[in-house]
Image 1 (cartoon, rainbow, N blue to C red):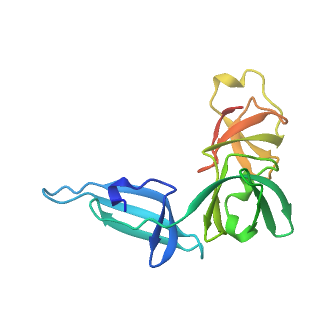
Image 2: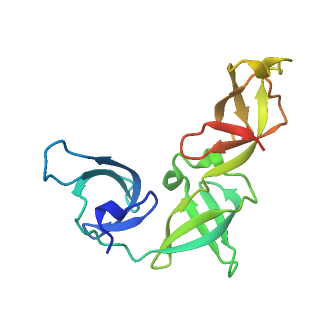
Image 3: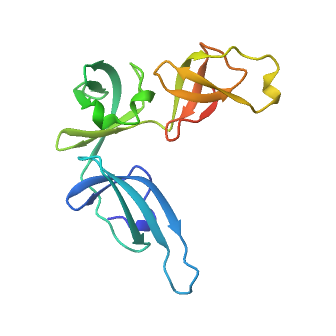
Length: 188
């Protein structure tokens, strides 16, 4: 059982008999003497998708959920379902579009590095890698000599995601993005 001070983003805990994933955490140090550090944590219920904000003292214990993490590959989309293949035993998992809210724009067929969260043989959700490489589908033409300035322009990626990229990039180039905030990192 981890303490609140040992929690990390992506950990799965059991709260009120339901699995919750840690989405964000923030440590608040009080100014008075003798007071303990408070951790403000945002959870997502993996079964219902509801958000839960809670605060814990640094020495409070939380119960870890009995959840299995499996490496999967995104294979294809069939109607409202996204299909993933387990890379160890080649079994298939299907996840509904509603359960992948905010993650669909980062999925490309054949993509690896994804982790499926399983509980009792059912897929609760997926974890994307920290960074992902995607191709630019549409953007304004590149401007020669634009590397000296920090200006950006909108670009539409092959998945439909729209991000801000430096002016010198052109359609067809592959870029690296953060999956947590969708921000441009570099060329891939």
